[in-house]
Each structure stands twice: as C-alpha cells, then as structure tokens.
Length: 221
Image (cartoon, rainbow, N blue to C red; front, top):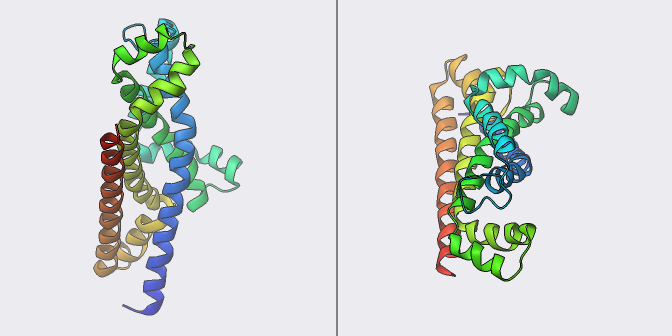
C-alpha cells in the first residue's frame, strides 16, 4: 500500500464524514418540524395538541412514500435538484441533497415516535398550569423526549453512512466511491477491505457515542 493510496483513503474518509455531517444537519432541519407536526396533529394520542386528521394523514402519506423510495433511484431522480442547489450532479457536495431528503422522513418518524412516548401526565400537568401548545412542545415534549431523540439521531447517522457508501456507486465520492473505483474496478481487495473497515469503525464510534450521551441524559433525570 503506497503513501498515495493511504492519502486517498484519508481523503475519502473526510468526504464521507463531510457528507454525513451536512446531510444530518439538513435532514434534522427538514425532519424535526415535520415530526412535530405529525405528533401534534394526531387525533389518536395525548400528544395530539391540535388534532387535524386530514393534515396528519397527508403528512403521513408523504413521509411513507419518501421512506419507501430506494435510495439509488432517489439520487437519480434528484440529479436536477442537486445541480440547481449545488451546481453539480456528481461529487460529495451533490450527494448531500439526496442524502438529506432521504433521511428527513426517517428523522420525522423518529421525532414523532419519541414525542408520543412522553408520559401523558406531564402534558396534562403543563395544560393545567396554563401552558400554550408551543410551550408544551418546546418546554415539555422535546426536553422529555431528548434521550430517545438522541438514540434516534444516532440511528439516522448510521443509516446515512450506509447511504453515503451507496452514493459512491454513482460518483458521490467518499469511501463507497473508493471501494468501487479502486477496490472493485481495479481489483484491489485490500483497498475495498480497508474502506469497509473504516466504515465499520465509524459506525461503532457513532453508536458508542450516541449510547453514552443517551444514557447520561437518562441518568440525570
């Protein structure tokens, strides 16, 4: 293994981390308000602060459709959008757009589920104290659901690492691209093995960190 190849592995790792970081941020920006809406408009739970069955059904259908899309197909469909936003349809920057859109529905469902798991008694106590719906959401539901949200965010990041590897199949850059172009197409099983090991290490580190943060939040209650 030459120094140039190790440098390429390092650059590919940085590309993967960049894709995952920015797509996580944007998916949370898109998915968090959507998940809150799914929860508060639900007519069937205590979290349904403002039941709106029709809106809830529409939002639910949109989330389900987006979650059902195969990621490779979603990337191809979003080529024009990536070109408009990023100025290109290939490379690390372009991959952030489909990664964010693919993860946003997953984040929305995580947020919805986490908020619905909050003890209904806490919500009722906030109502008795005269809290508005927005106060209940931001001062009661979100803080109470924070450990669960952290665990869900950890799963989202791990999924994005897997998605970023698939993005490499169509020129998305990162470790997936490295494994395909150098490991598979140039018959370098050692490069492919290293790329896989790096991905596994990243997943383990993120899972460990997420578990520790969530556990500490739970212990401080």
